[in-house]
Length: 110
Image (cartoon, one colour):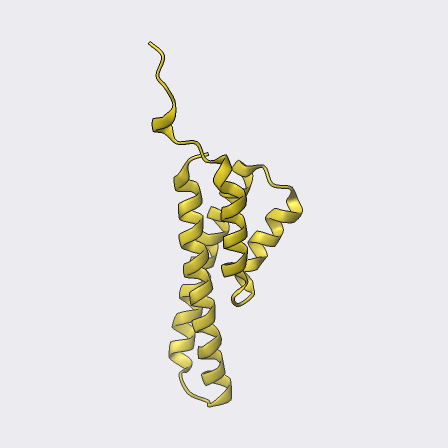
C-alpha cells in the first residue's frame, strides 16, 4: 500500500472531525440562542461534502488494508461522532504503518 492512501485518509479524518465540531457549535448557537441559521446551513453543507470524501478515502484505505467489515464500518461511522475521528485516526495509523511499502525501497532488477 502506498503512503498517499494513508495520508489522504488522515487529512480527511482531521478535516471532517474539525468540521463536525464546528457544526456542533453552530447548532448550539442556532437552537440555543436562535442565531446563526445561515452559517449553520453553510457549515452543514460543507461538512456533508467533506464527509462523503472522508467515506471514500476511508473505504479505499480499508479495502487496501483488507479490514474485516466490522472494523471498516467503525472507521466509517467514527466520522459522525464528535472527536471520535481523532482517536480512531491515531489507532488506524498505528495499524496501517507496517503495511506501507515505499516504492523507492524496492530494488529494480535489470
